[in-house]
Length: 142
Image 1 (tube, rainbow, N blue to C red):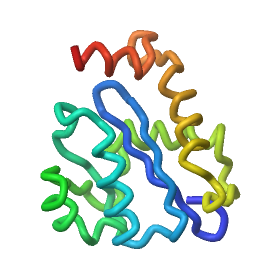
Image 2: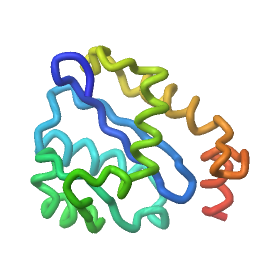
Image 3: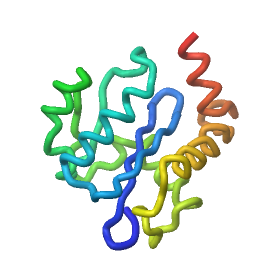
Image 4: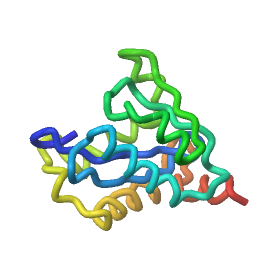
């Protein structure tokens, strides 16, 4: 979330911490999120698709349609339990280095978001034994 309730979407693969981002220029309605999320997920190899864990936000009100469209099961965290999405919460904290809280997210292009994601995906992480998310994902896919 950014300035005037503008938003972007983030997907973080749990094993590798690989990040994908997508713009939500028309807001974070259930329809907008479902469509953008389904499109973004299809950019990943199918063997990475297992499930999606989401918080309790109303933007996933169309989770049943999303599951029908993608075949990906959606699980929801317990209310007020952000630790159940630890990888995503940690990544969102890292994203604030690039996108401070008052950033107008509606102006961000997919190219800009891809550049930010690439920067984080090529950044070594202690939790990954100082490998990058990109390296860990590549190893998992081979």
